[in-house]
Each structure stands twice: as C-alpha cells, then as structure tokens.
Amino acid sequence: MKHSLKLESISSWLPTASKPVIISGPCSAETEEQTVATAKQLAATGKVHALRAGIWKPRTRPGQYEGSGEEGLKWLAQAKKETGLPITTEVANAAHVEAALKAGVDILWIGARTTVNPFSVQEVADSLKGVDIPVMVKNPINPDLELWIGALERLNKAGITKMAAIHRGFSSFEKGPFRNAPMWDMGIELKTRIPELDIICDPSHIAGNRELIALISQKALDLDMAGLMIESHINPDAAWSDAKQQVTPSVLGKIVEGLVVRTVSSDNKTFKDTLSVLREQIDHLDDEIMSKLASRMKISEKIGQYKKDNNVTILQVNRWEEIIQTRITLGKAMGLSEQFTSELLKLIHNESIQIQTKVMNKVEERV
Ligand code: PEP
Ligand code: MN
Image 1: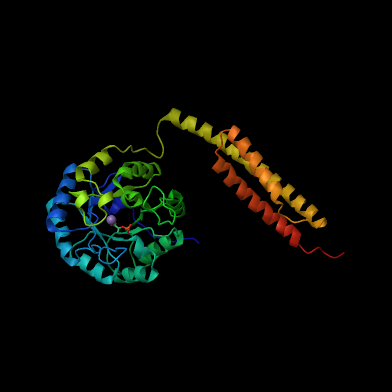
Image 2 (image 1 turned 60 degrees about the vertical axis):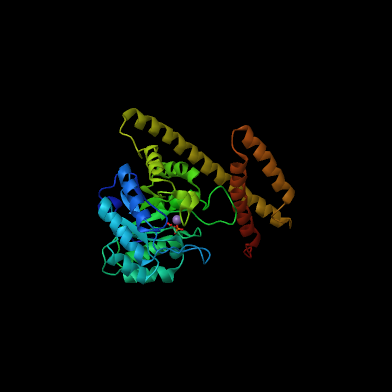
C-alpha cells in the first residue's frame, strides 16, 4: 500500500546534530543525581546531540523497576537546564504526553510495546493534535512493517510531521546472539518504502549487552541510518533496568569516536567511473539471470503439461532431493554458500510448483 506521509527531516528539528545523530542517556531516570550526573558527563564528551531517559518503564514482569513517573521529568528538565541539550522520553498514553509536554520535553518517542497497539498509538496521536513536537517511533516488537508504518501514519494524520523511526530489533523465539534480532532487511524495506524518513538505530536494545554495541552501530551507519540511540549510565552495573547493555558516558564517547562515517557516494572521479563500470557488469549479469530464470520456468510449464497428460504428481521428492544435492555441491565449488544456494533453489522450486499447479488445474477448452 502506498503511504502518503508529510515529513520533516531530523536536520530541521535537531539542527545542532551532525551525522550520525547521537541520542544517549540512561535506560531509566532513577534519581535526580544519576540523571543529571549522567547527562553532564555525556555532554562533556561533546558527541551527544540529545538526552534520553525512560520515565515510565514498560516492564515484562510486575515488581521490576517501573520508572520514576512524573517526578523524574523534573530531573530530566534539570539535566536539560545544566547541559543545554534537548531531552526525549517515551510516552505510551495521553497522560504521559500531557505530563511530558508540561515538563518541557523536546522530543517524544513511542516504545516498541506501544507501537504494536493501534489503540494506544491512536490515543497518543489524538493527544498530540495541534502540538508541534518531534516524535520518534520505535519498531513494533514483532517484525510487522505495516504496523510500524501504520503508527507513523496515525501520528502524521494528527499533524505530526517531525518524525523519525527507531530500529530497535525484533523479539524472536529463537535465541541468537542478540536480545532482539536486528532483521536489517526490515529497516532497508522501510527506507525503500519511505525514502524521506530518517531511521535511527538503537543498538542497545538490539544487543542486550554492551560488547556488541559498537559493532551494531557501525553496521547501522553502513546501512545509511541517520543516527544512533545508545543507553548510557554513570554506573551501568548498578542500573535499575537494562544494566547489561548500558555503557558509561566515557565508553559512549569512545564508541562514537571509533565509528567510520562513510558517504553514500563520492565526488572522486575515478571512484565514480570504476563504480559505474562495475554496476554495468552487474546490470548485464542480472539481465542474464532473469532471462535464464524465465527460460527455466517455461520448461517447468512444459513438464507440468507432460505430467498432466500422463497423470503424474507434480512433486517428485527424489528428483527434488537430487536437484538440491547436485546444485549445492556445484554452488560450493563456485564459492556460493550452502545457505544461499538452498534458499535460492527453494524460491525457484516454489515458483515452478505454482506454474505446474496452474497447468494441472487448467480446464481444457472443449473443441
Ligand atoms: C527503552 O528505550 O528503554 C525501551 C523500553 O525500549 P523499547 O521500547 O525499544 O523496548
Ligand atoms: Mn532500556
């Protein structure tokens, strides 16, 4: 479905930010001292463009630290006063919005557990009618691009044009190295669908541990994301939420310093010429691949007709196993990974079965 979003880029609503935009601060505002001290140390690194802190924390189990509530907004406002940096916090309902606006919060964000719920997103959107404030929308916990876009649309319809998306990874049943699987293709697909939308990566919630943050941050920049939201705490191990994934402000500074910012294109003439020659080769090879695939499907169609005439089933397991084995061996010899060859073959095979099914079920015209 085509979207129709009216958007203003981050550079218009966070003009002090360079690329990458860095938003940092603790997972939760715990005390005034912790909030302000973290903010001051972050500001001193000179790398941070906005401060974050959770005030209302959506926790998986009751009894975990659920945030300071409105009291913490004063600490955040104090951090803003002492550092001069804009502040941002998570809102999940109309009451949160009202309190955050009253406290002078500069940017709001919608958390992953709220983006999944259209009722909540609509409530937040309705409470923002007539308010000119930037809102960042985290991806829903489940990998559903429509839900993510839907939340952006609800806010946009309420008049919010200063928006960004935050990619924080997706909850998954399989336990991998990450707390939330990055599924980078979701971010790429979002950018392809809405090119003018800035995407910020949240490596802290993707990683779930501090060791992987630098690596994920670099990957995000290499995918041309506009910035990073990274959790930082003066004493990470003692944090009341997300302790394992927080870093000290000084480590935050080092992570940002170590990032390589690559450009989408280069003005260097030799680079451009070489790139265009290589791209032409790719275009040519893609043409060949497509026409070979089309020829292959035509033969599948003939086979389908032949099977039909002889009353034979479409799927013949032995033949399919033989195809997989021989092609994977061949692919390996040519330097293609087993996973790639097997996924490619599955796609081709599915299409081929669909074509044959159509042939089988076609009602012959009577003569
Ligand atoms: C957070 O930013 O601290 C948070 C709760 O994030 P998410 O909504 O991505 O889980
Ligand atoms: Mn957190």
